[in-house]
Image (cartoon, rainbow, N blue to C red; front, side):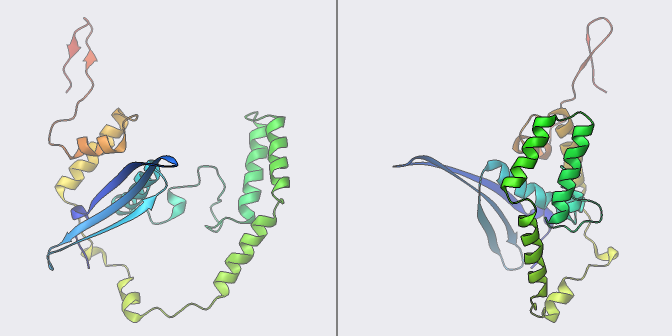
Length: 221
């Protein structure tokens, strides 16, 4: 079942209730669409640990669709724990990369001796490299497990489409992308919900006005 990407709707749910244990909040993210051929509406919701996580789930989907993000290496690794040729999972390479990063920060004066001592003490208490060895062993065990044969129909469906069959974004979606990029630069402190609302609006963007030489406000070009 295929539907245009622009027809997909997404939402975040926040609920709050009072129980004998106090105030409890729950969060969820949902996606849905209308299938024109069958006339049916489809939706899927799943619980999230918090509002930022729910928004992050949607941002991951949107980044994959809008910016063609195809791997974790393209969007993560802010702590330099994954090298260019490292496998995507956490393992011994993660530990050694973290240690090399700590040593580099110490040489550059970014952290002090207490930070280094705390780093070694923490990893000593967590059994040094043993957890990473167990991770490597578990990953190797999973790889050795014989997987079920993929049905031919699924294998055919998973093949990439030729470039001439790629769907092209509409002019409206392109306009919203451009507006969103400008808004995120102008209002980095605003929530993603308010920026999306502004980006989908039809009003002109509010361009900050600049003062002229005589103290008068110059019109934005």
